Image 1 (tube, rainbow, N blue to C red):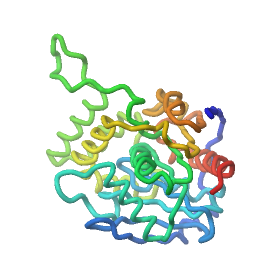
Image 2 (tube, one colour):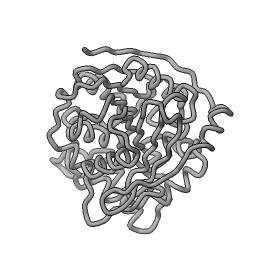
Image 3 (tube, one colour):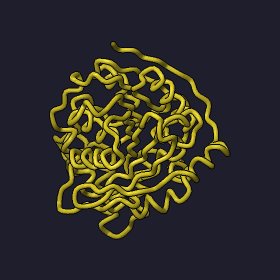
Length: 310
């Protein structure tokens, strides 16, 4: 069944009660492959588990969402993907989306969680979708927030071309921006690389995305070298692979910002790709949805999970 729900939300600050919940959260590491994955655990032990996977650049993108009262009854597991915050770095020359999905399952295993709701923001949505393809029985429901769509939904970007090529298509803007940021990072300019990518994605107010989390900008700078080239190559390879979203029978929530963002133009096609999906638009925000509208995101997730309990 395909259902589309449009909801209007206000934007609110994190409450004092939420700040207390954050202080009570437990940070730990789970063994995974040849390393360990850091996670932050909060909420009641008997609550339905909700595992959250952040996107690129900001490991704590879900922090403002996690402290919202709407999610107080859930056992929240905020995973710091490999290469971010206190998780192990990449080893070897390649690291795939499937490897990152295995890391997330390792966290679930360490906590004794056989089945969970899973939410993914941006890049984290690709990891979540890979988890669903690999072990669908372990995911009770899927929440995609401004997420990478399943492979085959987004049009393939043209290959990069030299500027001014006579008979070549123009370079894909995101790819061209990534190439520029990669060059800056190779020259030792992490701040410039982060600004190049972030201003392209979030616009002139890009710092707001990071400053919504205490120490977010500094942590993003420290983690920036992990994005190039390994994470970028992993998502590119995954987007070009075969994927059968129609085979997933879990309920799916697709959420996007009404002010535009990577997911907004693909929202309808992403919803249609799944057998049982619904959509929520959060007006007034863009790709920074989890940090710009945390209460809206939390309420939408809570409403969705209440309709689809484990």
